[in-house]
Length: 214
Image (cartoon, rainbow, N blue to C red; front, top):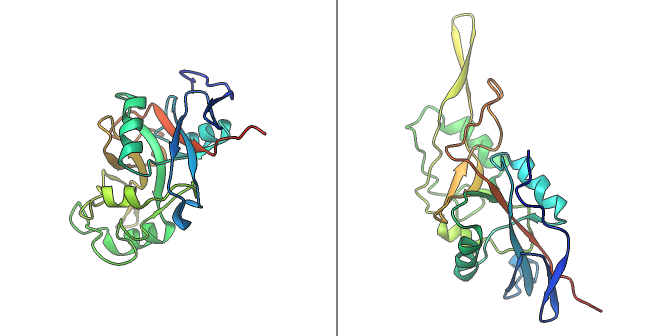
């Protein structure tokens, strides 16, 4: 992988809070859902091959931060301006419980399954997040309940006369060039080591608490 633009870990100040260079400082309403966060720094890091969740997570870790999401419309609008036309990786992934339910109960149905009720509804607990400092309510409300899981193929193996379909379900949250959220594969296809994503993701959204000078 090649870093498009190295961001030195230099903090700049806006008022009393200091964010890393080229990160935006957002004021937030502290609640239990965002770990009582009053101010937060969010930055777009350009980087190749952010289709892969562990790579995106690693880039944010290099910036001493974590994968991030916008907490409200104001933040989303600012992030869209910041990232330009890039499609990027953001925080959010299907929970292992909901992925297990998907594989156990839903494969073999029509191409799109609607998470309409219960725990695995997008507005409930379908997603888990790396960042405890962002309230995901805005994201959940932005993600329509009719969104299903496209199966873009499977790997098949044969055991005797039986075919076993090894499905690969997209489960990681991405942000498209237009700012809409999408679900994509998190890793390469293990059968051919190729990308399964529909787009190239050339950046990642990272978040970190600001520093405060003493």
